[in-house]
Length: 104
Length: 156
Image (cartoon, rainbow over all chains, first blue to last red; front, side, top):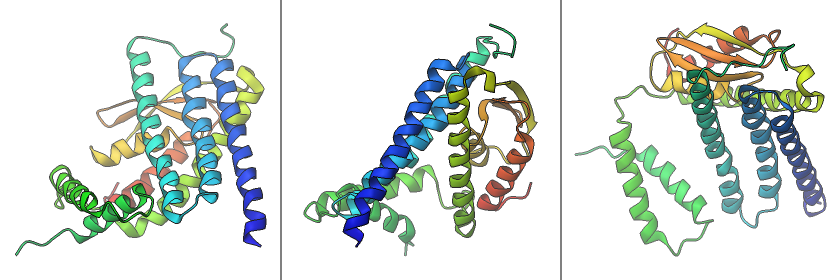
């Protein structure tokens, strides 16, 4: 039973993950300034990564290999949040003004 | 008699087991790695430093997971709608958590929560970039602060 359903659940998770990656990339392209683009990268991509890793972990050959995949998530989250903060802070220091509604 | 930090040794041994994908033929190298990792962690984060209250961890993790899914979903749909979905503002909040790990955790997690990215943390004030001015950011930041305070066992 489990062998029958697992590939479908895993496949569904991978598709959801791909959707969030696509949305994150769309945000990167469409959002108007550095700050809003960071939102798209920090949040949508990380959620996409979480779903992809969960989907792959379900297909892993052993429990340890699955956990190893899941371990990537917190590490990538910490790195991504740290880098977002560094970029936002630097942009603010350089005097980059946030985009406001009505400006080009 | 030195008390060994068994919990840390156990955690690092589990970590090695995961990294080796369950194989046991590299146990000699694994032992060395566990000893080195435990020693490093004792130097960098001595047991006298503020202890985490592990009892508060599950509630924090659930809160974090729910909000990172909310945050990712929200920004994904904003990306589909394009810039007309945005009304960004800078926001300044007072931070009541103690300096150090609690504040760093706050700004890290806020960057993964709905609508906020940390811009600057200085003198107990936190500057945030918020995607839309109508988002209930202040209330959510307060809720997160309470979770982190419980995790570190500090009052705010």
